[in-house]
Structure formats: structure tokens, C-alpha cells
Image 1 (cartoon, rainbow, N blue to C red):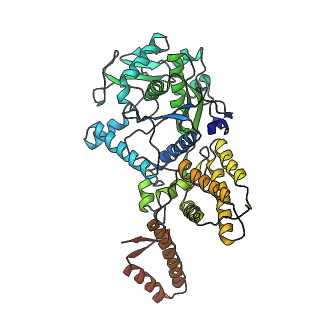
Image 2 (cartoon, rainbow, N blue to C red):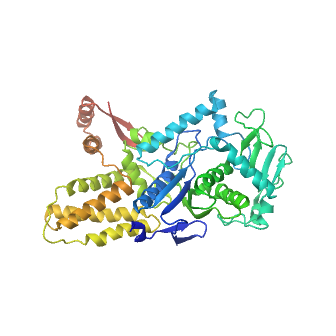
Image 3 (cartoon, rainbow, N blue to C red):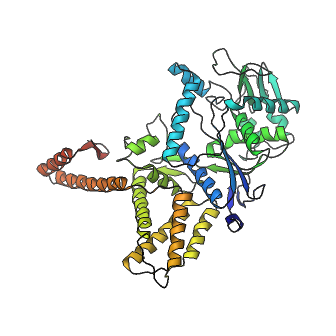
Length: 493
């Protein structure tokens, strides 16, 4: 018997707006597709949070014994600057500005994407296809939709006919919008567009002379629409119908809505049973934006080189911080939140280390099997990682009580506690127990923060000699203090 026969998952399905019992199309097998990055810039923390959610889901499904085919694509062509099928290809624009080949841009930021995810201890997907590697499949889908009368060609470009499709299938079924409202809220076409209606979206775009990335097709030298690539790749590797499709909340409309319409038009059936969407990451209560300076890159978290944080944090601490919020909730990234997560993370790791030295007794004062099921119940309830973490800290409390001699545990229960804590902490949440040097760095940080507080107190008391002494002694030890508007930070030389 597999674990999935005993542990039944409920998934919040964006399509129905309800939690539904997860039943895969084929027993014991799960097909999952997640929209990957457009590789024209460094992966940002909001992207990482979305991919992290599905990394944990992938890990848990595998733990339950499912054979999972997890497909996460790389968008390396076709993603224009806005969702109205206008503007320049994001990758081509970057290549033009830097005077390099588009595939140099793709290579640089694909490598960056993989490096960052490796630092966060992500499992690689089963398949990682690229848009440019599936041009032929995209052209074949366009032909099929044209043959069914649900698309039209104008001046070498092909557009999906949303109003024609909506006559028999509801366009807007995922985002809970209807075509009438979309028409009312759309701007009028300016006469320069080839579209019949503003709601129509590109399946194929004819390349303008300046457009670097182009491929031959029956209609023109051009490039596929952004939405089409995911339909082509998910269908090729997971079939016309598969279990789970995931992505960020911002992709629900129009990207995922268009995917549903294309797949229904081409194959005559709904493509996905469970649509899952991860919510956004904000920073200091505001949307992350490079234009306002309210943003942080993953590498800046690891180095501490960002004005919004007071020190560096390990990738596992940052991962732990993000997992303390449910994937469907907005997460506010703050320095204080990271500091609190770091303390909690090391408290958990210290308890796991202490597990190895616990002495068994003849009785247990804690019901380990009931606690274990609570851990499963948390993950079975739409992959609720914060509840799981709360359960892990319930075990931490028990471990510390055993150390202090106020609680006892039998050998069998100790073995079960060890295996369960390790499974949920490392295999499912994907955390890494940092080594002694990193733990030492954490302790050093705490000591320096204490000295900074003492220095601030000395300055407040006008004891400038003591203030200078603390600064100078730290500098002699290779620790430089930096006084700024946000307070005092430090860096090691």
C-alpha cells in the first residue's frame, strides 16, 4: 500500500474556487505543469516564492508515493512587453540594448535561474522544455485551431477569435470574467491593429523588420504568441488532459485563461483538472518594484548587500521564511521577519541535532503517532506549510522537555520522531541543516548586534570614549560598522 492510499489531499482549485479532493487521472501518477521564467533578467524573489510553492508540492506528492512528471518551461521567445500583443520581445529588446545575440541573453539568465534555485535547494523538474524548442508543435496547434474556425489570419499574423469561441465555450471561466465585461472595459482598437476585437490574442505574430527572433511558418516569418507555448509543451509531455497546472496569481488572466481556450479549441476538452495559483510577495507592505527601490534580489539576501536588510541570511533561512506563509496568501518580506525566521530556523535545527543524544525510557509522555498524523493533515489541507511548521515546533518543545528531564520517550517512539522530523523538515520542506561555520556566523552576528546596542547606549549617554572603543575594537577584529539613516549595520572584512 502506498502512502497516498491513506493520506488524501485536498487542493484549492482556482477553477471552482473551492478545496477539492485530489484524484489523479491515472491512479498513482501525477502530471504537473508550472509556468517557468521568461529569461531576460535575473530571477527575482517573487518568482522564487512561486517556484518554491510548487517545489514543496512536488516533494510531497513524491513522498506519498506518486510517480510525478513535473514539467516547468523556460520562456525564451514570444513574451512581448505587454499582454496586448504589442511591443518588443523582452529577450530581443535586452539583446538589442546590450548588442549581443538573443540566445546569449537566454543562456545568461537561464544559468542564473538554475544557480539561484540550486542555492534554495530546489529539486529539478522532470522536464524543462523551451519555447524555441517547440515551434513546430505550436504551428501545428495553430493549424488545428484555424481549421476549426476559431482563429483567423490577417497580414501574416494569426489571432484567436475569442467571441467565436465564446459562442460554445465560456471564455473567462478561470478568472470569473465574462466577455461582455471585457468588451465594456477594453479600449477601442486604434485602426492600426489587425485584430477583429480587443479581446482576441495572438497565436502567431508576423515579425517586423527589426524583430531579431523569427521562424518560418505557413503565414509569415514570425514568432508564436506567448500563451501558445505552454499549451504546446504541456500537451506534448502530459497529454491533452492532465492533473495540475500551477503558476503565479498574476498569470491567471490573461495567460492561463488563454491556455484553457487554446486547448479547448484544439483538443475539444478541458486541459487541466486542478488549477493552482501562488500569491504575490510584497516588501515592507508595498509591491516590489525596481522603479521605487523597494526590491531585493536573492543574491543580496545571501550577501546582505541591500539597504532593506541588516545582515546576510542563508538560503535555507530565506526558504524557511517563505514557507511560514501559505502559498495562497500574500507574504510581506521584511528584515524583522527574516530575523525572526532565522531564530526559529536555528531553534529547529538545534532540536534536530539534539534528537541524536536523547535517551529512551520505558514510557512516552507524548503521542508521537497522533502528532505525525497532524503533520500529514497540514500538508493534506492544500499543502499548508505554516501549520506543518507549527507542528514541527510542537515536537521541538517536546525534544527540549526530554533534554530537561521533564518528559520521556520510548525507543520506538524516538525512532518514529526522528524519521518523521527528518522527513518533513528535509525531504518535504526542503530545508538544509546548515553547518557549524554558518551556525557560528549566526552566533557572531548576535554578539555584534549586542555590541552595537551597547555602543548606541554609550552614545546616548554621551560616553563617546566607550562608543569609539567599541567601534575601533570591532574594526581591529575585521568588523566594520556603518552608521546610516536606518541604523547601524556591519560587515566583515
